Length: 169
Ligand SMILES: CC(C)(COP(=O)(O)OP(=O)(O)OC[C@H]1O[C@@H](n2cnc3c(N)ncnc32)[C@H](O)[C@@H]1OP(=O)(O)O)[C@@H](O)C(=O)NCCC(=O)NCCS
Image 1 (tube, rainbow, N blue to C red):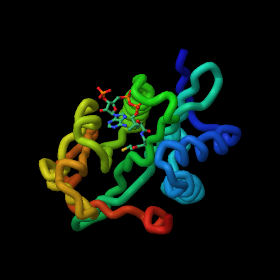
Image 2 (cartoon, rainbow, N blue to C red; image 1 turned 30 degrees about the horizontal axis):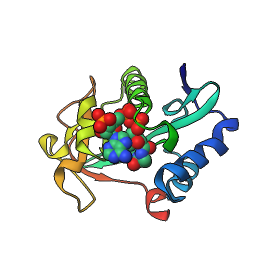
Image 3 (tube, protein in one colour; image 1 turned 30 degrees about the vertical axis):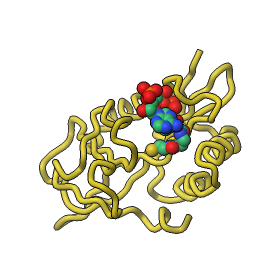
Image 4 (cartoon, rainbow, N blue to C red; image 1 turned 60 degrees about the horizontal axis):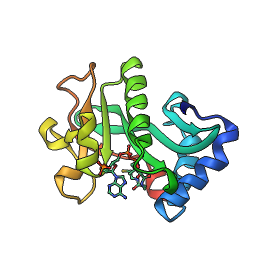
């Protein structure tokens, strides 16, 4: 049985370990720590999935900037990590869906992700160019995706800027 809940302090070591194992480096674990200690952190959008009371996956959504004439805060989904022994069992998908529901309930407007299009389009993400949202990364446009939520409005366009926290790791 899988159980999804908001992270607690006691989950921090497992979250760091899962990120390190999933990505094969500790950059993402460090990123999670830095976001947690920044003003972009949203406690209810740092979620863990447990199987038999053991944390096997973590997802984090935090505020990033969408800059046009004005700067709007939108959600950035990063990182998402599933323990290697638990991948391809639907756990990552379940965490994305749970996070999107909370984002919707929080009346957020847009979620942004850099990732594999085959995976994220399953959850309604589309290439950001459709919405006039520009990636800060030199990647093929299909990898930089957005999911508009109910509160989406056309003023949500411009260039995405990640806070300095993301460059430090
Ligand atoms: C990518 C990841 C978050 C997906 O979570 P998951 O629980 O394994 O995925 P789910 O079981 O919910 O969904 C399965 C889909 O994920 C994708 N996927 C999972 N592992 C993959 C891999 N090693 N290579 C390519 N695609 C993969 C596929 O689209 C797969 O669909 P399929 O089984 O129909 O081919 C997880 O595998 C992971 O932590 N990988 C390492 C870290 C990473 O790359 N994170 C990037 C997030 S952008």
